[in-house]
Length: 102
Picture 1 (cartoon, rainbow, N blue to C red):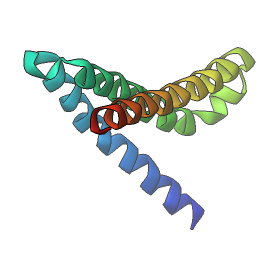
Picture 2: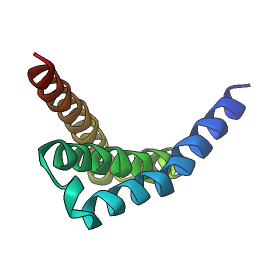
Picture 3: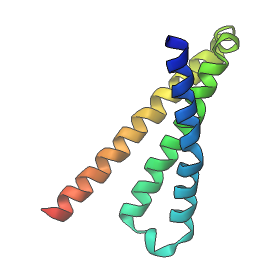
Picture 4: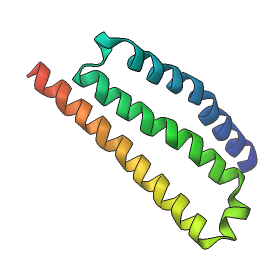
């Protein structure tokens, strides 16, 4: 049962990659969307995109990653930093929305 849930998680995360990439490209190409909220959203989407690519790859290749301590530490720290950055960009967007409504 746990393997089915893991496979479903990997598929969902990998399925979101093209849509995150399309969102990033659209916000990068249309100049009206490159205002402050748009740039914050681009940074947030970029962090989610990197995490949605790296996390499944880490789970798929975990046996070979665990054999190399440097790669294991680098992968773990990268995932932590990217996830933290995504939450921080989400916090910036929430504060900007709050200050606009206030």
